[in-house]
View (cartoon, rainbow, N blue to C red):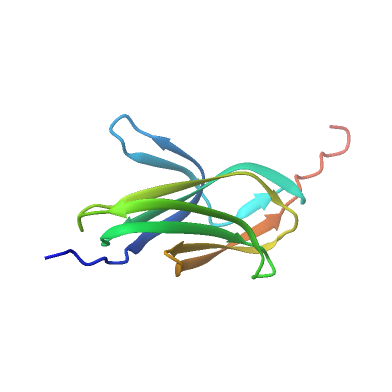
Length: 139
């Protein structure tokens, strides 16, 4: 009997500053972000990582990660990658490296995660401008 293709579930999606790997293969997510605080805009952020884990699927799939601007419609960046799940006990962890990304304005950005053109998750990432405190007089 031929196995049926099963669309996977998204177990999690994290925005973090960096990703490291231990000697045993486990991943370490560094600086898990719920918002992005910047000293000014426009500004270029040199590295962010979007970490997604897919589970409970069977077959070959295409993951798409999109960063949507504050207008809630403009796709500022789009990343695609393929992965395969061939047993239901197997998972696929995909790391999307976002490099040299320019935030032109503060506001509510969104990250969208799709598999085979099916939206699985959309979550907001507020971008906040917080200038550094002014130096006291005479410092």
